[in-house]
Image (cartoon, rainbow, N blue to C red; front, side):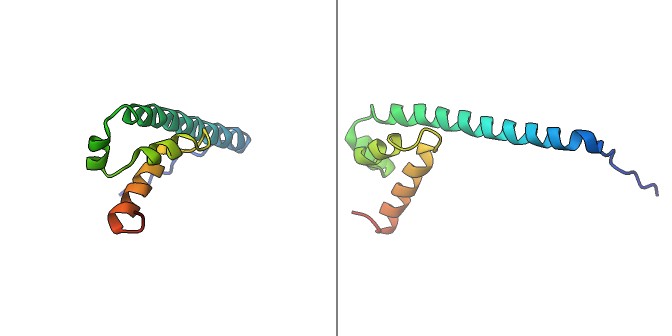
Length: 90
């Protein structure tokens, strides 16, 4: 049985590589939120009876789209639909 060690990143590169990884993750999250925002805007074009089938209201879409640009609006819609399903909202 042989044990192999992972090659270690030189200490001089550890900081910059970590910073690049954090920056890449932040950029990916922002792009994902922007794509979800575009999809939520498409939901606003749907008729009310279809939105009711999904479990959301037009007000929920309005509130989700008028949040901070970095926040994912689809997450907010999912929360409001779940609260309505559980009876926490009217």
